[in-house]
Length: 115
Image (tube, rainbow, N blue to C red):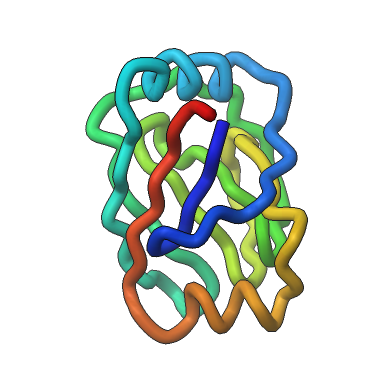
């Protein structure tokens, strides 16, 4: 899958779980664009528009983590939080400072699509 932030493609190491398989199925025929909103000074959250299977585990996140919250929202972290999430993946080619620059100053749009 391809993950873009405001049109900039970033590398993601996707998890091997039921949530990611369902996300792949969702974007198989058309890209999913999600308008994200800043929340809490450490994350951006956006609605998927449907529910995906959950396998929530108490997790402490770090910058670059991509998780599923409540089964129907994608959360991308530029800081840290501890909560029960389903892990989706991790941005691997951006530092914490770069993630903060991308996500910490304004709402963004992410797009998830198949290659």
